[in-house]
Length: 106
Image (cartoon, rainbow, N blue to C red):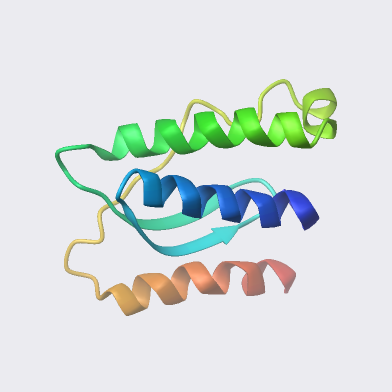
């Protein structure tokens, strides 16, 4: 997910988080995965947020970028990793996510 696909994916994730009233704190798109730091209402649930993001972005991106339908059987896998921030300062978690693109270039 690079170039215009990356740009559009970021737009879509921001829009979806806003729709779901989840605060998108940090976002970084890697070529083969995404890092998100989101504050989610526990009553709504993290699983629903991830499921909604994956479903809507897959449907829209595959419609707008036909190459995604010919190169990949699906846009997203069924799996994902979630970790709570807990006592870690948000600044440290944000810094980790922001540094992912830089460390990949090295």
